[in-house]
Image (cartoon, rainbow, N blue to C red):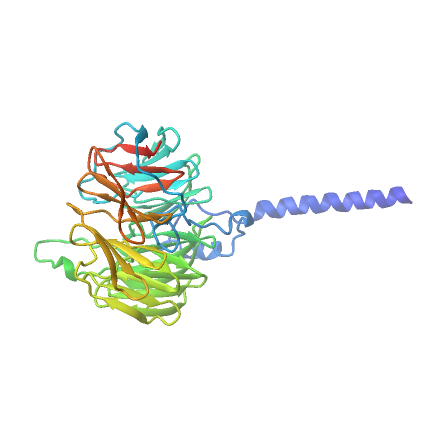
Length: 423
């Protein structure tokens, strides 16, 4: 009798395994390449696709040009005492793109990723060895974003890619006919990639007024593992880099607006209208901070969508990228120097003068780090602006400094990457 029960149980268990295996093989698989325009039905079908639960909380916090999802440009690192040695430097990796004024490096674990021209580079942070570099059909990529094992890149030929960052094989690709994807705009959170795209405009003849042509554009949320679109919001003109905080996505357009939309479904929470087109928002302590094209600074309350203050300051914001840290806002001005503003009032706190313009600052452990065109790297006290150290570089820096593990990394205009140490 007992033997019969064992036979029945074994038979049922075997059938269950076979059924489970068969249904697993019949599940729809994500396509390698899809188009928002041409394959809408396929994208909709993918929205219900099974997601890998181990990766559904994918996010790019700390591994994107804005450093954090909130675009604060703050590194979670100990900082660096005065540099005294070069740990390593690479050979010349590229020839500078003369149209670009700033190159972004992102780091994850023991690797650094950056893009120049049609090449993407992966650098070993311990040795300086170029582990990988690749191009695809001579496509111009833009600043990479890393989340988990995936590397996301916006491409200048109207596509957006997800690569496996370990072997650089394509996981999926999105094509949007007649559109281009926004430079440095994407962010990854809640298992979704938030990215912007805009219609390509082809100018013919000198009679075209370039400043008046605003393309149709949109911000999308797509599944980070499959590329399937979840939602889309239409806007006017290129979106700013996207910030994410507390399940809300923040971005600006080319029609003077700052948007707040629900990260899950794309429903608008509020929109704020500035005096001019705005730069990337930085999120800190319940407020969004940003500059506009007129050089003004704003603080907007995240709950109400209303301005807390607007500062029409003399040393207008040159670099749209702001650093937000410990109730202070830092930026490079239209005049030579680095500036700090009280985030609660908009009042200027300190100014550090330089002989040439500086790139956008970053912050780590109470210090503001900045690369300037006069061949210097600077570390300033975040509270009072006092100089901690100044390091003379052999050539003008071509990237903002990256801070980590007591080391500073940067690229120069000759295509050489450096690792500086205080030892």
